[in-house]
Image (cartoon, rainbow, N blue to C red; front, side, top):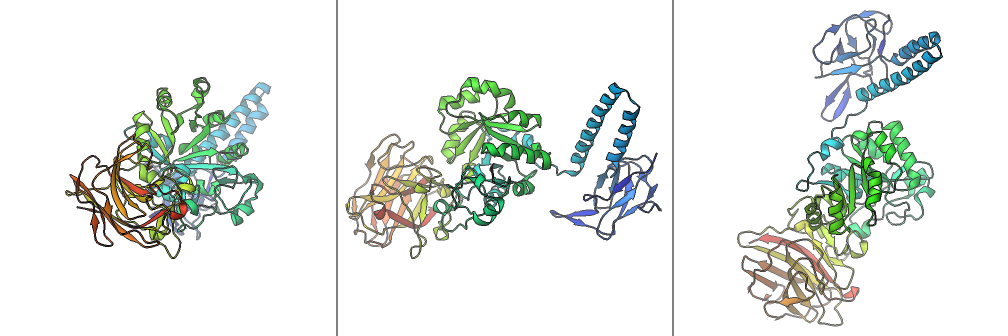
Length: 593
């Protein structure tokens, strides 16, 4: 028998964990053992030159290399930093190969075939052993994360990294979502150079400053010339972000955060599979293979022990699902599916995830049918039931979590932050009957005496028809979209200020297209173009009152009405029909009474 060389590779250094860092420790002295704990110390060692030693000393760069006792093929080194490190011989592959070659030389044709098989199995086993020793272990695995997921305790994922509040599929989005504890949905496409980039669409048009197919750009062009185009939806306070290569995302998050990974373009599937096989064989521990029901990639994924999430179309048949059921771990339903279809998919018995989710009211509906996974573009908002703050910072021009326009994920209906000289003012640049939910302040937390909402409002240009109005809605029990003159899913109150100065308070019943005025019409001074007006809404356990406070302190008085005491609120363009005459708001604040 002979001694085997231990160390000398890029992984074999004396290191100490300090906080979240591994620091090299040159000159550190270590003892060698035959077990990870306990066991017997091995002292029959030699250095690289063949001189006898009883312990090992790290070189000036921290590297470790030595020869072990005869025939020993696994040791554990203890540098006194709280744990022992496993090492296998650097020459183990050649030793195995030599043994197998000897068998091959002496064997018959049948024996040679068996030896070839044995060699392949030995190499695979060695690779597997090395992977378990040296590749990063998942801090959080797919199975542990989803264990215990129920409709009462669903799991939430960051759709496109949280694209309703951050530029989608960017490091800024991924890092924020991961820091908040949410798994990442990562979509990839391949460029002309074969590099995989995190981007949902196969074209650049919707989300970046460039146009054309992703696969028509080289790696260098994307890295130097392509930025996101997110400000129209997220606000001018955002700096546009560069696109991010998939390898950067995997290197930073793999093993630390669950990743739901999908190749969007067909041409990206094989490059993605090759990348994972070659450089990330440990990925199945913390990566879910996400794919459309029409994919042909599921056998590959299951052969490598990936969990699979397969999402459906509205028209996907049960027969199609049956054909792939054995390859599916989780089914995916769209929020647009009918109640019955969601229930049918849940009834198949496998965990069901839903997408895209923007509102808490959607979470309530889906989990009510048994959905256990929520892929949300604003997971921080939909996964909680409390407000995030009580006063606006619209001067920062950054979209707030919980902001819900009537049509989600569409810049046409997004909250608009006014530029100078109107910084701090916001508006909804879409008519008619558009509104914007303020979920970051919801549900409003009332004190023993209720709560108060204050804000400023103005018309930069007065409506030609002075009976048209804008205003503010409040008291809704849920965050479903509110539209004046439209049947809404939940009821609430709506205060209006008309172009002629009339101030009114309305109650809106769920399912009704018209409101009911409560209290009297108050004749206030007519608005002046581009001049701020101030308002106060007081909600007590028994009354509702609206005041205009920038002049004579006009008020509806405390109207006795207890119909709605929900905590959801928002801005409303009311009956305004011309975008140029839409209302603007600023300085929102909520206080307890």
